[in-house]
Image: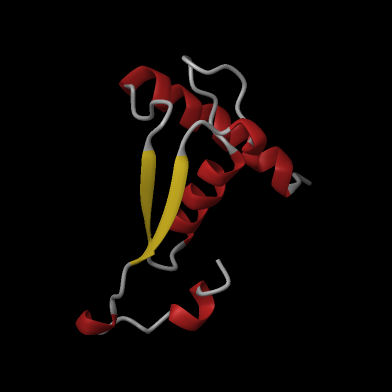
Length: 91
């Protein structure tokens, strides 16, 4: 059975490839992640916080992360979705 770290490693390889191919992140960038409570936005936030290897910077990792990440809550309660603020506040 795969561990959380092995899954993150696999996904980070895919994210790093997209970052390189499309020049999505550069050293010094400040990235805002809209977190709605769904697994896709929470996964993206977790992966970016673990650190994505940038071609201009070398190996990734939290201690070497050359960009900043800020999580922003996307409130869907105005359109009838449940209020997930209590669930997301620890993040």
